[in-house]
Length: 108
Image (cartoon, rainbow, N blue to C red; front, side, top):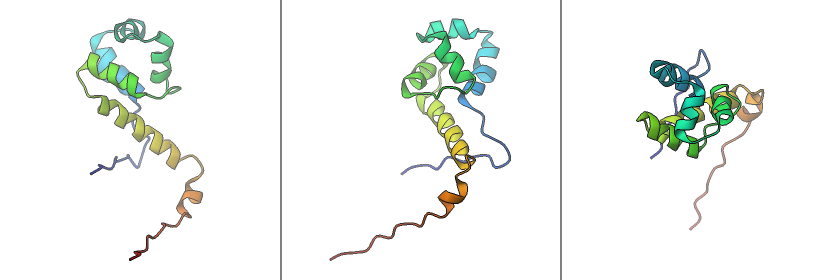
C-alpha cells in the first residue's frame, strides 16, 4: 500500500536542501564543508542539493539519515514532493489533465 504525498497548495514544498540547512546545519552550527566531509561527499555535491541544483539521491539520503538520525525515506519524500510540485507547475498541467485513464477490460 502506497501513501500519497500531500503537497502544499499555497506554496512550494520545503526542499530537502532548505530542511537540511534550517533544521540541521544551522542548529548544529555546522558548515556545509564540515558536514560534507562528515558524510563523505564533495562539498559541491552538498552545496548543489542545498541550492536546489541537484536532487537528493538514495545514496545521499542514506548518508543524511545516518548522520542526522532521520530515515532515508524522509529525505526521499522531501525530494519527491519537490519534484511533484515542480512537475505540476511546469507548464504541462493542461496537457497532463487531458490524459484519459486507461480502462482494463475483463477477458475470460
